[in-house]
Image (cartoon, rainbow, N blue to C red; front, side, top):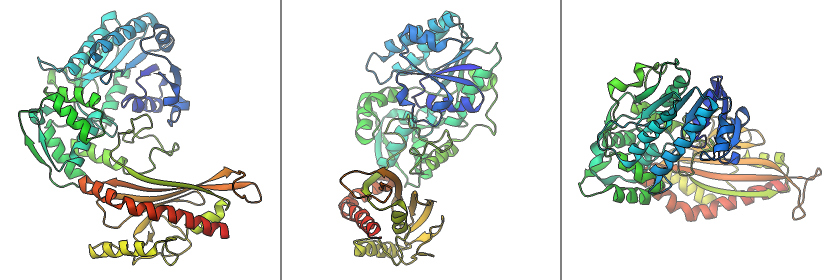
Length: 492
């Protein structure tokens, strides 16, 4: 089956495209710029076409020979008249699909069962009607909040809960909604492409539970290991003021937060008569609960190198390279890089002996002080040392770190086990670099480029304060450690 995925640089589309490839579909994606998907692990497995969804000739080329077209486009961040743009874009697409003889359009919209809808949900509903107006069969899946790293709604929930131990909220905090895990949403989208020919129309898609936003924030806090959040509801906060507040305390742009918050005034719950389960099979193992979905989203974003390693297998829970930079939760990084005339073997010999009796190449008293502070608060401190001063084994302790990953001669990743309000890693990456006139080289004209990264994922407000307090110390310790280690390698 030949399928076209629009919105492949968006949250759902960026995860649907590789899943369709895995499921055996012949996948084509329509993007404005191929460069936006060039670094994805699935780039070479799909047919990439560049073009604007408002351009008739581009659509005709993209839809040629397509059996099923996934319509995953929206324009909520384009300004006050986003609804007019969405309707015009849907009409252009529907007409092109009819000309190309597309057998089915699968459209992802929003649950819209209330009489008085927000502008965002009203626009989503109107887009569905426009897509069905040219006679091409349409399966419209209407969903609420999608739970997974990268989802704008989930990221807003994540940041509000993590940043604010106490918050004043509008009335919508107690409106019911039926969130769905991203993997379950993807299941229904794929199932819609394979559905029998007679299946068409509008179907509501929801998760296993109906919750309020207050419930979701409380349960996210528990899953993330945060203290109980204090939530006070007041009648004075308008959606506009709420979106401005979200834009201030979270990295979610206000232009995106505003229409999402507007939609929270509506009851977003599946109508049993319209349930997708009436026409499509449930996911294997059933629908995930909210807690299960949040746990998986948090676990998948705990790996600090998840977006840099293109060889990693694609997983729906991962933050994708096509996601905006503000998704995936807060991650603080102190990155240093330097090129040396020492060989990779010489540099690796030095780095693989870090800690224990060797120490950390400078400011040893600060490292010891940090270890003693950790011991006072019940942590492991620096007393553990190393099992072998020259051999790195995954899982071995290394002072108050533990070796999380090793690729000999290339990568060393240490995970902190001292008591910190979050999760911390220290990473080294080695690569060959071409020789230059400003530095000596080995006999083969090759030098070594080293990247050192201190990575911290804060937990709550305390985690953020912890990182900010340590910034002056990082500015002293980390450059000195890298510089001294490479000096030692060059002496060898």
